[in-house]
Length: 441
Ligand code: SAM
Ligand code: F3S
Image (cartoon, rainbow, N blue to C red; front, side, top):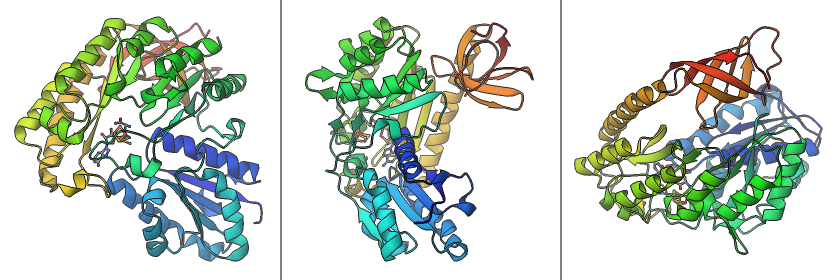
């Protein structure tokens, strides 16, 4: 293939973002340069998400937009990866003839070879084997997209069997990376100037590698190198929250005081049907345990509204649990039936309009709570690690993962990755506004 440019479009979760970073590294090692404009691209990689039907359909819309570019550039190759490629490989081949290469969630390492083969033979190529080694791409090849926060995938796949979720089908059974390779990757990221690392897995706190469990891994990573300012991880499952896990938030000072812990529902009937493995009370008890160890722990969660059979009482129970949990943020999803899940056998019996109403009610409740919670930070000075600087404005995150916007002076040295102090002056439901405290560290 002639040397040229690549363009990546990513849908979905942080794990997909991290996979796209690996793809970028592979394509760069193959001699291609990144472009942010699809017009000039010679390779387009679409990284897909299958979690909800609407997310999955985005692939076909994207390919529809890109296929016309082949007229101007006949050498253009379109590759599709991620969960939709894994789940609907055959359908993509039939519905989207413009797609040249299909690459499964465990097969990224085959991408450049398949692109070359598609180029030289003019035939379409695919690799969709979830048993292949998902961790075979060398860590130093990954082309990280953020200058501030580096993603490090430590667990691939998921062994849970949530009735609504397609992930175990698209990403396969849990496979954990060795602690040695994780620590080595983090050291190399610190050498490259990173100070914040986020460990990733669909159920990251289920991590276990030859007797090393997730709290052990957190300690190993935390103690490995002083240059690590902030350690984060996502996504956690409530079933793996216990005393040992919770203690980490008290005992590891550079472990950021933030946890995303999806609850999904507040109704015990729905939770049992979802096969989440806890009741609403057990979930709330785990939050209490976590807060016992770290009083100021910031918590966010995912909730699904309109799950099959969800009654008005079930929904009220969810609203109550969300109120009691006092979340700092909430991601609310309308239930979407997914192929191959057990829930798809049930009638999707909550009408769309009712799902949207429940979304609105819960969202308004949560936004009110976030606004008043955020108001309590006004007047405090927060340590902010900068994510983005644009014009005279910067934004970044506090240790609790709160988003803060503030102005910077025109001659400022502040860049992504810099740590500054900001005095909070204003509060909104989803962000804070502050003023730079002039004492750059
Ligand atoms: N592994 C995580 C966990 O333990 O929950 C997240 C998996 S999923 C990629 C992210 C979120 O999407 C879930 O927490 C759930 O709230 C939502 N989700 C998953 N399947 C869904 C479906 N079929 N319909 C609506 N939302 C869904
Ligand atoms: Fe999905 Fe449940 Fe695993 S939401 S990713 S099956 S923990």
